[in-house]
Image 1 (tube, rainbow, N blue to C red):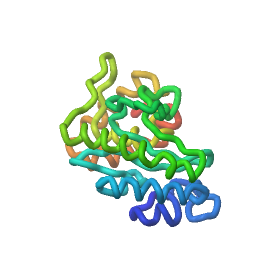
Image 2: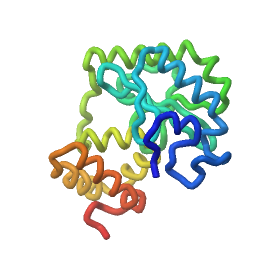
Image 3: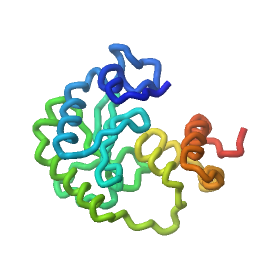
Image 4: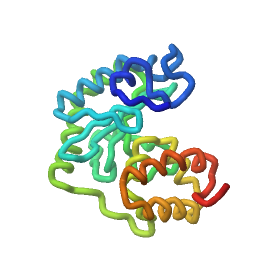
Length: 207
């Protein structure tokens, strides 16, 4: 079961797998670096929230970055990554189907402090877009996703890869189903329920 308190993430993990609250949890290996990233985000003036069981940092009402940990690395992922200039050429794609480089990937805890000035400059750039209300242009020939689904995909690289691997028809089936719900909380609830089907490569109407 996913966690509901942000301190739990830094103490025990996200709660999404059986390694939660064990020494084998991915957050344990990278906890020093994750704490450093948290400190940098807060010093930058970002508002800390728990979203999708991970620390998410906001500014001007917009999601800016989200933190995550895997066995091989930990990462800071940018929302609205298509806007980022990436002057230092440090952003990487989460996977082969990701449209834009959107994450800073760390493979050692010490990297965070050494990259601190660059991280702060990237956060300032993203904050500027949020303050100005600038969003990436809509890409042609792409399915327009409900905001709740876009946020869920941006927050969870594995989930995003699974969704993008679906056929266009199956992707559309989820969009139609979600758009039929009038309330955002209903759409979020449906996304949680659809998660296993999406990972299984099925459409919304498939059994």
